[in-house]
Amino acid sequence: MEWNLKRLAGAAASLLVTLCLGSSALAEPQMPDPTKPDVSVTEYHIDNAYGPPGAPSTFYGQEDVQVKVWLTNHKQANVTVGSFRRQEDAAWCRDVALSMVRVEPNGKRTPVRIRQEMVSYLPPPPRPGHEEGVLYMGEAVETQWRLTLEDGAPLPEGEYLVDVGRSDRWRVASQPKRIRVIRAPKTRIDQLNALHHTAVNLRFAGRYAEALAVLNELVEACPGSPIAHAEIGGVYRDTGEYRKAIAAYEKAIALYEGGPCPPRNRGRPCPLNTTSRV
Image 1: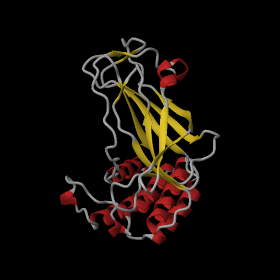
Image 2: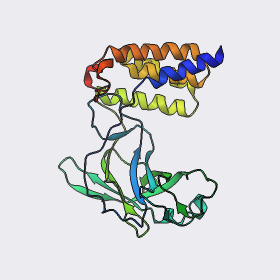
Image 3: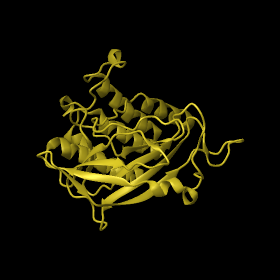
């Protein structure tokens, strides 16, 4: 019975749609080079669940500002990159130099001196017959970096562009990423997003009772949104309370299907996080 409930909770979760927010085009990537792998930078953030689509990735309160850097082989052949299975041996990581500029309200861009710290390193799993130092077609190495000011202090509130520097080892395949840092949310949209971020971070940290308390506060503030109910389902799924998880997911699905994106429209873009939800 418990196994069936667990599967049902998983099936209910899979029905919910995660809306991924893209960044505006800000710079041209380098031309393809068949001899080099691609390096790209992406945000490591919790999606803005509330507000209009297309907003920059946002870090609220005391959240760490983090990005991911990917070493990827998109070529039609294997690429030699040197040792990469272990972070300690991965020479390419030493060439990762992230840069940041602050974008002022008037459009002025000011370079920011930052400190970068790798917090995660995930190579592709080893496979029989694969040579060390060769990145095979479709393989990628994922790294995660924490960004602070040069003295280690958190980034102040504002809007920034983050990019990865060029290197002889790779072709830069991404454009600079626009992020926002909001330490003290003032608008209703930002306050709701900050609650959502807090709850998700608590859940990831295994602090489930605290996460539920914040999510219940979010439900009270915005009862018509499926987001909080879906996250509640995730908490109960993590704690093995599958009946409660299913009930929360069913509530989220009912709100989702009654919103601006009915089932018949699921093949088209859906404004799950439009202001009509708040």
